[in-house]
Image 1: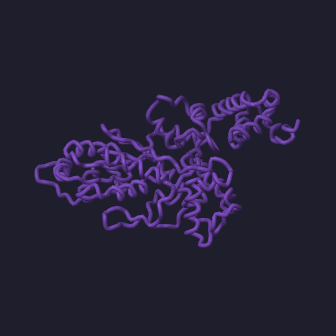
Image 2: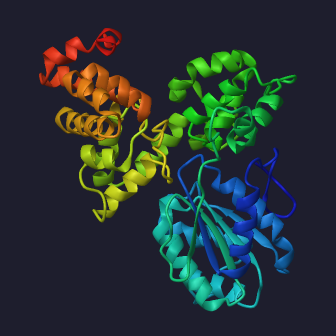
Image 3: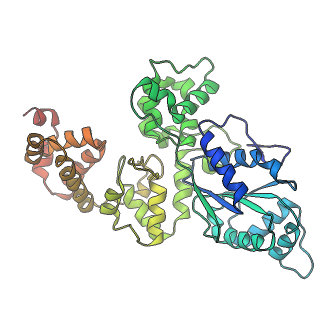
Length: 412
């Protein structure tokens, strides 16, 4: 984003599909002293927060001030970075936080702190100090995690809505498809989302789990690949989706960079959980994550942070499109026995939900189980991986070999 005259980054493109979020977040900012927009990398936290800050700017006579903390890695530099941005010089004999609090105390302004995650503890301390001294100060922060400050409102930003079905009307209503169409039209003049290509658009945005950054990177490839070519290659999102823009933040120039930034923010325990979750080649549920990575509900905070990074909120399975870094072996820590245990549980769960004859067939051969799970649970890739892990572990090798021809087994 370029810099605008009001101090906020200038948006060079339209915000698509976030009308409800703008309304909700604006109300929170006006009614709460501290609001933190949270979500995984690439979900559009900064873009939404800037839009909201500009929408409510008229309510703050002393202005809106934007501070980008993305380049700050030393927690001791957080207060100084904010002070420099606001033009506040340290008073003799006073600490930097005290000086900043005294300067802001008589003002009614909105302070936007962007990209707080790598210095979250320092940002939390500064927010607490400033809000205690300045009654009319409002702070809007963005971070991959909440700051845990008293009175903080956490606004979880979800991915863009996906098509609820393959019906044309549902595809047209999807915010994720709308973003792909709008950005593809900019990248490839003359592009139009026709009924003929709408299912391809739905497939692309669904595979990318409605993540705005991923969709924008994909749209930039439409001119070169066309929508059919992009749909054929979208499974290799990490290798395919990279920006040619050298001016943006390095961590947002590719999905691989988002994964790397997210991974580095985790402590060692969280990184171990993250690597184990990378064994999933596609969607996974919380139950599957617990089976492979260990019990997570109420578990260690580091483990919970890893799962938050590796799955999206909501009831549908998450796409591990970038955060699990498929294809990047440094993130992979396969555990064949635990993955196999989850695979067996998935088969048992799905076969319990289908007619008895199909269930009996499934239990008599893993091939039909693979077909059922692929049909009912959107986990075909995971089942195929489970069979490969069976072979690697020397467990059920004979049956795994027999399931390499699922069409014949299913027909029997």
